[in-house]
Length: 151
Image (cartoon, rainbow, N blue to C red; front, side, top):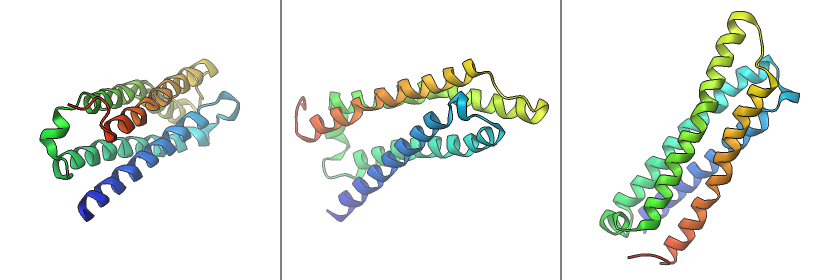
């Protein structure tokens, strides 16, 4: 029971970290507030976001393997696979923003130029789409935890 509790705690902590840094990405990608310091700060925010993304995936897999229900039970559950697919899609949706941030850092270092407002808005849009899609994962998790749609 202690292992199950620790696995759940680590998974929730990773999820909360992901949400905080996804929110930070969205908050900092606003043309009105954008400057060279924000470009530099976004590098670290993006790194922590991706680190937490990996941590959510790793702790979720750890719960599947070492959790009380076991891998065989989880592997059969359509809602679990729905959560995993949504999570991967969220990662894919935030890739354009990460690429843009890297490009902006290179441009800033080379020329001192900041991105255009339209580029900043586009990067934020990708993060916002991913953030809104993220809201479906807890819904699937609650249903799964309560046995709705389980096989």
